[in-house]
Image: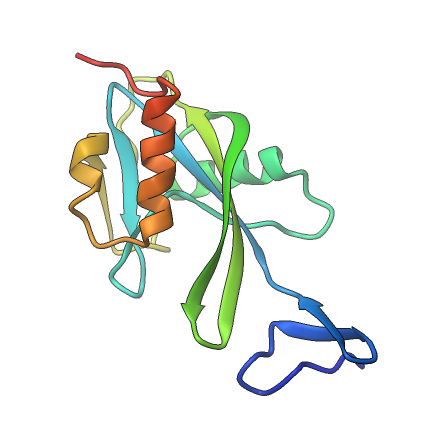
Length: 153
């Protein structure tokens, strides 16, 4: 049985006497460039987020993210390299390690969102900055722009 440091910090697990480390879910997210825009999804907390989801045991990260994009947007996207990581404090007692990848979709079909989310928007990277979403999602979008991930036009 693993012991957490406290009920308020169930994500900190004691590995050795007095030594605690994170035990948190891993969430894989994608900044997807498509025709100069990116899809964002509204979650149950009414925040906008990047498409993606939790890494399951035994799954390769890129394959997991491709699966999540298919499930959430009905797109067969190409998953590129990871480029941004952070620990998201969803609630004081709930932390998630987020690994963000660059991804592209070259098809013509508009995304169709699943029942996991409330809404989907396609926005330019500049428009994303005004939306209610965690700051590190906005940072990932800015970093993707700096890397030339979005077409101009």
